[in-house]
Image 1 (tube, one colour):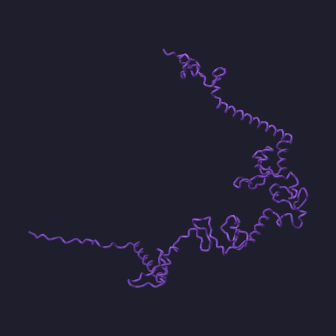
Image 2: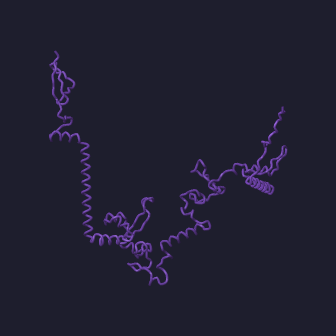
Image 3: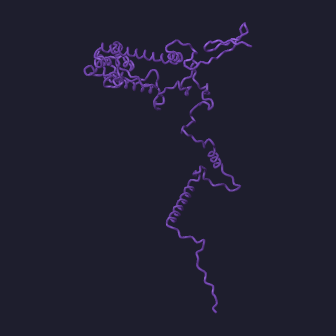
Length: 366
């Protein structure tokens, strides 16, 4: 009989055996080593540089070893609350001067020793810089290299150039009399160039106030007096107009101004044919408006009459035109007497009267 032999042990892989590295893992490890070497070089060259967390990259002292004064002062300065504040609007608020208190915005504590004595009891713009009423609205647009007088002179020249006045008038200069534009009334060279550009009319400032034909009319006046329509007034080629800010409300639409003689020339000669025809049309429209107004008034009176006298009119119509009193029955139903409180007479009888028809009954006690 053969003896049983234990089979040899199989060669199995150890559980802690590591698989070979892939090329991607090798390149990642090399990059990590290069990065660590670079960080170590930067740390050795700049020992006081900040790390990403915001603290100083300084070595922690050993137990029982004191830190030097420089490291303590830097750490305290870095951890102060004032240095860690966030300035959201990116303004430097260190040199803004005296500001109103947070809880008292209308109260400003002024330093009277540094203020100018105006001998009048008021503050100037230098002593009260936060008063918006004393500030120029265009002051913010002033360049920093220009003084206030230079900025005012620049604005004046800018307005003169825009209005073509003063030294910027095109009619002034050599040879202006021969080739320049002149006033149609007096022949002056100093015409209003704004009117020349908008209305194509050459007139000077003095002649504008003398003649009534140069009066400016509003859009409402043109519609009411000359009976012009909105499409006609909006046509710039037909009737040019000048736009100005509304004097009543600043947020309303701009005011359109038309030249009187241009409006009359178009309305009388072109649209209506003659002044008599325009007046006849105006009277006709005025009469039609009066009729419509009276019709509307009568309609309103009728509606009010129906509301207040509806009960009486309804009784009158159902009674066939006969007179009726308030409280009368208007239907053909059977009348039921409703007697009131009985009154005792001299003979001892009780008299009761119907509250609707007035019928009386006498009751005797037996």
